[in-house]
Image (cartoon, rainbow, N blue to C red; front, side):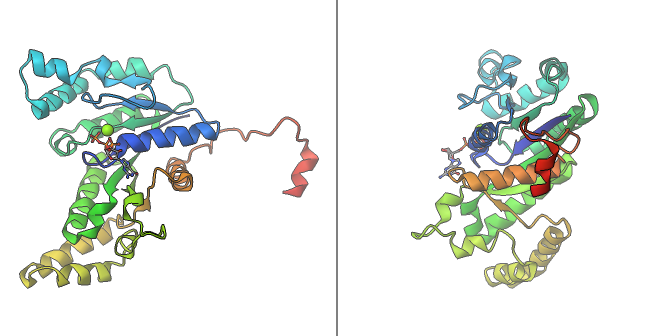
Length: 274
Ligand SMILES: Nc1nc2c(ncn2[C@@H]2O[C@H](COP(=O)(O)OP(=O)(O)OP(=O)(O)O)[C@@H](O)[C@H]2O)c(=O)[nH]1
Ligand SMILES: [Mg+2]
């Protein structure tokens, strides 16, 4: 069985850092995972990507040779990738029993203007037989501001709806919102899994009454899509990364088709103790 996790979210949310810590953690569990880089502007990685879009096309070349600016250049790179999906098939086709962590770029227009990620998710699933899921990162500092919280949740929802695969929302950089005793600050912690009614009260208390019905509509949309809860991500804490990996595994039913591995020196009688 093959598995793939798309790591998505806005620019600077911590996607590449999360990919590296997920790989480090999986390695300590003795699991083989590989990094796929889909960011044509990426410069350096903690782990060498097994598959790298820069081997197909680099943003620097596009900007130099075709005289695109950085954002137009990125869009060009992705359109080029979409027209050359056989590149991915050649690169990924060789992996059997594989678990891929796919580091995506952060420019939000790549998620909304051109259907790159949905096409890619579909290609991975139907053409290459990968069980594919996604995570979406939103920075914890955004949660201190209600308007930014709304924007973060709505962008996560738009990504989830356009991808059409199961998705987990992560609140990244939790170490930045801890108090001096190491506890997550209350005003942020309550947004990990907020009560929609309290959320509405909170937002209404900070906005002009003429926007209250809009607030209500957004909160009920958030509630309907069941996307209000975030898992906390602190890359410096192994148990946070471990919990997230377990959720991702569950989401893809990782390992359910695998034969259970029994340690060699355990005969059947030993199982009575468990
Ligand atoms: N304090 C803290 N900083 C973090 C954490 N994760 C990432 N960062 C920092 O945030 C910045 C951006 O992190 P990246 O991992 O490059 O973010 P990204 O989402 O891959 O960014 P783009 O690929 O440019 O969209 C870097 O300076 C990281 O060191 C975290 O958990 N805690
Ligand atoms: Mg990155």
